[in-house]
Length: 277
Image 1 (tube, rainbow, N blue to C red):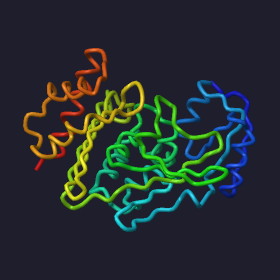
Image 2: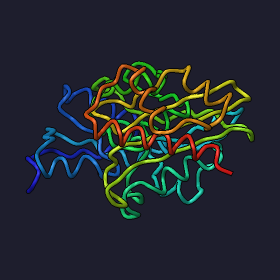
Image 3: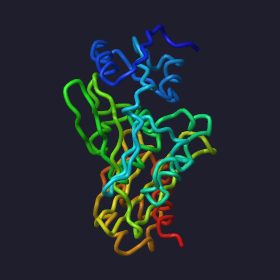
């Protein structure tokens, strides 16, 4: 199939891109890597009137590590993270996540900002960044603002971006040397969309513990803090599939039996992975 007719505008600076989005009255889409949007357009699941190409915007390519905060620009590709071109502030977690995304050809072009903005429930970065406590940095026509990832993704393919706003990047707290993390996703075969994603991040230096379930039918699910705190204090012993299913039930989430079992497996393996020798 081919996409419906659309106009293409290549922006050379951030203000120009924001202006183009504002003039489109909500009928424009940003394109950078295009690894998620373009296939949907080819299937006519997405039919924007215009595309705003932001690949040339240097404001979205900044990467830095200062005062315990890693900043990753929205145009950073998965491959750049995989290849260590981003400072390792997460004790290897972000590199591991990037390495497992689709195939290398996709990772070469796909961007972290595009993944989060697209908000596919099966995508890796929405779950991983939520587990890490990341904050999205957003630029609109009038001002810059920040928003925690837990507030940013509203549901499947739905985020809290205004029509004339662009994600600049993400601020991610640096993990201490004593931090632990686990990340596990269930796929039918390598490179496929995930059926479930489990993520755990524990950082005693900040009294931080998060357990997240991804690849549900909506936004990643931040599980009860009490569950993550218990794991942080007592370890992975006893946290099996049954325990994971109990945590999911405590969160009020309901799935079909097969899905519940898969989600329980992903969570339990993420927790076990965090405490593996």
